[in-house]
Image (cartoon, rainbow, N blue to C red; front, side):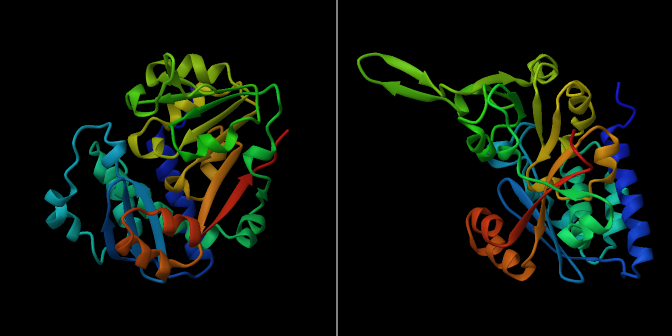
Length: 290
């Protein structure tokens, strides 16, 4: 059993960030704005910092109905607060939205240390993206069905996806002389099959939303037999130190390289697709893969 709970991982990560800010004489940032969107919260901090995190609304509403507009007065009270204090206060919360703001705050605080120069300075390596490390006979397990799954098609033996959302969200109905169903090259499982699917995979990629709903520690424990154990998704843009201690050996982290344009696109685009594609730099980080 993994000795690191998800809560402990986040708290320890925050402690390392506090030390990094002190060592580098960086003033502790405060929250300037919070942008609420379907699926995502965007947190804007002082010193041109920006972070984003899943909020389990829209297509990701698997933890009950979340009416963020009903929380505006409460959320407004976070404006002007120290980002470290907000994260520390909300990490232990049982409320999914409060945990979302905790992880988003850590993402915001992590940004100065996610550049290639900082990653290397702190002793980590930048490596190839996971798609280039697959072997033809690999069985890949992915927790969470998103656009990332498409990038792996045709590059390995099998792809298994575990999901909390209903299977019919991802099915294609093929109507010809008969009726058939897709996808054809992806096996979809419910979250109840996580242990079986992850423990038999060569590569496991875990959605960073598990840091918000508190299931990361359980999933990384199931993945201990995998050659590559990775984290993916914009919610996972935090420094990798404790994630690697807990069992990961690969992380896809996003450095928001144009925070002002990211803010503009977050406000004016109906989704975050433009902001994600045009204002971030992907860094694939590892402590060293065998």
